[in-house]
Image (cartoon, rainbow, N blue to C red; front, side, top):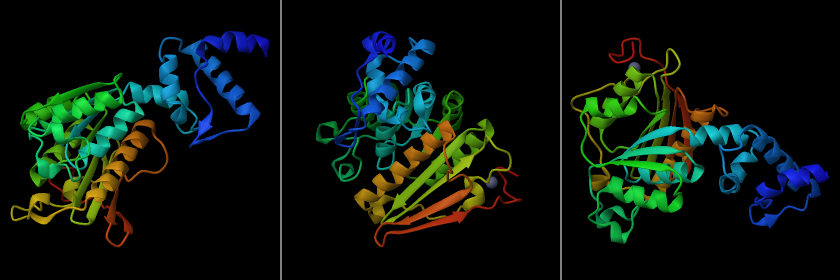
Amino acid sequence: MVAVAQLVEPWIVIPVVVGSSPISHPNLFLILRCEILFINSKNIKIMQDKELERYSRHILLPEIEFEGQKKLLQSHCLIVGAGGLGSPVAIYLAASGVGKITICDFDSVDLSNLQRQIIHEEKSIGLNKAESAKITLNRINSNINVIPIKKQLNIEEVKSIAEGVDVIVDCSDNFETRYALNEIAFDLKRPLISGAAIKFDGQVSIFDFRTNNSPCYNCLFPRNDEEQNLRCSDHGVFSPLVGLVGSIQAGEVIKVLLDIGTTLHGKLLLVNHRDIDFKNLKIQKNKHCEICS
Ligand SMILES: [Zn+2]
């Protein structure tokens, strides 16, 4: 016990608290200390003690632990869109310690965005959204690398960026971008976490192209030139809905990165926030899909 205490001493910074209540279990702090000692012996320079404290509630989860948190810190996520969905996605991934986040948006912050795009604030009005997002994210977590992409990209430029990432998150508000990201993710075999929200209705899907025979976005919604592009500016959107959908997307990103639990891969989650109705549908791969078949 003494030896453990001596060795552990320089590293002990984690208060053992769950929620807002201190835990009374006498062994938990020791268990945590021993785990940190074990971690330190193998990974002495990988995570500093401040990081161990910051991410301690993740490290305590058996599904994540130290190795999972280390993997998050080494992960790179591409978020397309810094609006209603991109806001919660980026905030949760930054807070969770995803080490590198590339966020794209060529638009600038408008007063009418602030009702739901919680990554931006009044003094961000007029700023580019990706730049505004970077400021907020680095205010939340100054140890992660946030790369804002402020211009409108062509497909080749997005593809070039996507080649270097582990996961792509579609937080866009138009079909053109959705179909383009679907093709890019399919070509590069990257998981695509897709979300959408309009009025009181939201949806989330994962197309995990790391696996064979994954359906794609085009299987689910075959491209149609006459499609109606519903936008918030025309139809309105319930503010907390984008928080709900974006939070689910962020959770699915972490689960995909760490291979945790059951994801929405090959499924379509439909959410109606007005009546609190959740439906989970299975997506079939379209044998005639022009993208993935
Ligand atoms: Zn397809």
